[in-house]
Amino acid sequence: MIRTMPEWDNVVAFHGHRCMGLATGYRVAEAALQALQSKRDINEELVAIVENDSCAVDAIQYVTGCTLGKGNLILRDYGKQAYNFARRSDGKAVRIIPRSREGKSQHELNELRRKILVGNSTDEERERFAALNTRAISEYLVSPLEDVVKIKNTAIKLPEKARIFNSITCAECGENVMEPRARVKNGQMVCITCADSYER
Image 1 (cartoon, rainbow, N blue to C red):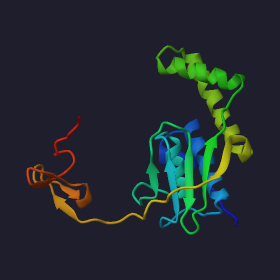
Image 2 (cartoon, rainbow, N blue to C red; image 1 turned 90 degrees about the horizontal axis):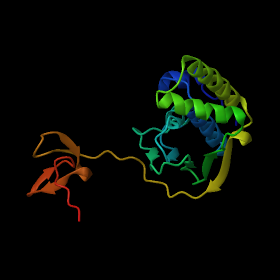
Image 3 (tube, one colour; image 1 turned 180 degrees about the vertical axis):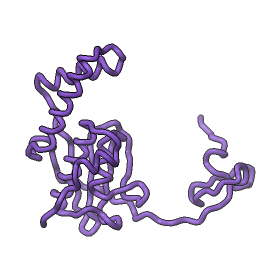
Image 4 (cartoon, one colour; image 1 turned 60 degrees about the horizontal axis):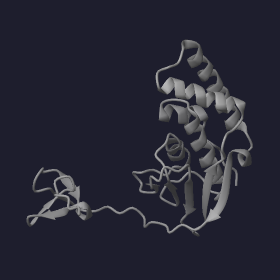
């Protein structure tokens, strides 16, 4: 099967800026489509379960077509750089882990990033960071896939396809809420935000 990847610049435009996180998601998505021999999803045939909410997820949405709105992008925020993909037709699933980037230039990038984040960097250091980062992203995007990600077959319990539910009006705030998300409070149906929490 011949697959074409969307232009990197289109992914950047969707996300808003160029960064290594976005490049990581781009390569992860490429690996997923290749491993599952899939095209960009149209109607929930492909499912992505991501374990963080980093910039990478935007690239995964754009490239794979798995989206929160369609219900086939699921966030399980474990804070891990781990991405799971499955094909509904046969249940084939893969887990993709980006490989660590190491080396002298990566160490320098990390040090410069720390300085920039704490507001303790010079103009020259910010320029150096931008140059190193641009080069690192460019190299990453053309590196052999096996050098940037690890792919392993896995088993995933696929969620059911997204359903459309009736809405009810919250008795307190008057806003509509999806029926299965409503709660009962003092005998009336309310939304989660208007419901009292009960914790012990």
